[in-house]
Every structure is written in C-alpha cells, then in structure tokens.
Length: 114
Length: 115
Image (cartoon, rainbow over all chains, first blue to last red; front, side, top):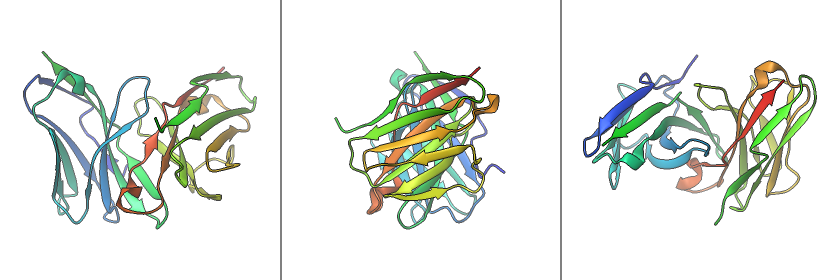
C-alpha cells in the first residue's frame, strides 16, 4: 500500500520555464511534507518543506503548495535551470514526538534542457 | 563540513554471508535512521534510533539488525543476505526537537550487491 505517490516517473522542461512536480498521499495522519533532491551517486538532500497547517511555502525559485482536502502537494521551480536536473522525492512525515518517520514517493526524474 | 558518512560506498557479499554497513555523523544529531532503496522504488524505512532507543518498523525482516554504540556511529547488520536484499542502503540523521526535526540529512548510501 503506497501511501505517497508520485505518478510521473519523469519530466522534461526547457530552461527558464516552470517545472511542476506532483505528489499525492493517502494517510491523513501525515503532518509535514518535504521535497528532497537526489543527484546520481549522492544521498537525497533536503530542498523545501511545508507544515500541514499551511498551504504554501516559498524559498527562492522553489515553492511548495499543499491542498489538504485533495491530499495533494506540488513543487514549482521557476525558472528551471540545467542544474535542477535530478530525481525529486516527495516525502510525508508522521511525528512520533522524538523522531520524524518519513514515507517517500518513488521519485520524479526532472530533466531541464537547454 | 558537518556530514553523514557511509562506508563502504559499494559492498559485494555472497549469498548467506553476514555483512555490516556503517554510518557515521558529525552533526551530533540524536536520531539516526536506516532506509533500504531498491531500484526505481521509494526509500523504505527499516528502523531508527532515538539516542540508544531502537525502533524497528513492523515489516522489517528479522534478518536486519542494527547497533548504535555511540551518538556518532550506527551499523546495519544483515545476518544472512539473500538476493532480494541487494539494494542501496541509506543512513540519515535528524534532530529530536524543534521545527527542523522533520528534516533528515542523508549520507551518500552504500550499494549492496549479493552474489
């Protein structure tokens, strides 16, 4: 039972355009959502997050939107740059009080072309 | 730079031969996690430590064990690796308090091959 789903395995976007990566979840107990970026041969690195009490969080070129009623979040990258080419993982968290257990999606490979 | 280090980066073991993967961190985080990631799949949490308290996920096979001798180090032991255990193993850390405790810091991973 996949609780976090990224239905697009890959996405290709031209440099300078907007990249939109989508993520759906099923468990209403998730209280925090994160996006991680992964380059080949490296571990995932934290990109941006959003609490379940918010609907938008912005950090430079990256914005995450959360629609709780639809159990959907999206990551917008504007403008897209070639260095953004990587695999992006959506993750959802259940707070245990001392640890935050992440459930990941399967990732979307973003290719930013010149 | 504060970081999460995993050794080795690539490990080859034989079917049934015990193997240990290691993780160390210089972030002084209280929580450490081990994930298994198979090809084209999501990273899957195996277990985590809050300080010395070990927390196993319900569906983690008994074949997988872990040790955390101190704050900085954590080990993943696979007692009898099967072909299905070939995967990337990711170690991560996080704080145990504050709003940033949701953020986990990952090492580069160890790719395990079972022959």
